[in-house]
Amino acid sequence: MSQDLSITALILQASLVVQLVMAGLALTSLVSWTVIFGKVFGLKRVRNSNEDFEREFWSGRSLTELNTAVAGKAETAPMERIFASGMREFLKLREKRLDPGAQLDGARRAMRASFQRELDVIESNLSFLASVGSVSPYVGLFGTVWGIMHAFVGLSNMTQVTLATVAPGIAEALVATAIGLFAAIPAVVAYNRFARDIDRIAIQLETFIEEFSNILQRNAGQSGANTTIAGSGQR
Image (cartoon, rainbow, N blue to C red; front, top):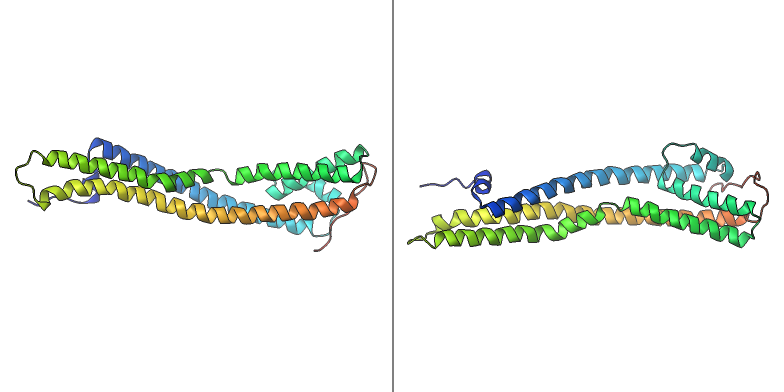
């Protein structure tokens, strides 16, 4: 007598524990894909907005004008927020007539703190993908082992065991491993891709901090809150 060995039938015929494992892995995979698509569009938006601001930064406008323009925006790029934090601290220390070294150090510390906050936001949910990629195969394997144990317990009461009687139980259990791999593989691939993209963004931001610090160093020591801070011009 033929048996239905389709994926749907195997899932429905599996034991309760294995079904719970499959459901958990399927839900995890759905959340993982949601994070992946959100990260793809989010990182693309960050890269584009940073590049737009960087072009504006090197356009030759004075930093005072650029700072005013950034302050008037509703949404800003990570690079813009780092720039704003550095300018804000630099102007505050300049008004206090501190020495140029203190002005530059304060601005650099403010930008470093802002950089770390921005990096934390950009890296959000990355650890989730890493966890899914590393844990899902083991969860699927647990479901498989449990399913095989359940199948063998059911076969212990049979007097004659054939491949036809063993195959359905084994197949039901192996579905859990397949779902675990289905959840893990995209998460691992996406994690590695996003990690490289975030490293590039971090390098871009750190380079900007160093270049901006050099510009502030040339302007450090000027007095007066209304003094225009010279821009950078082209690289």
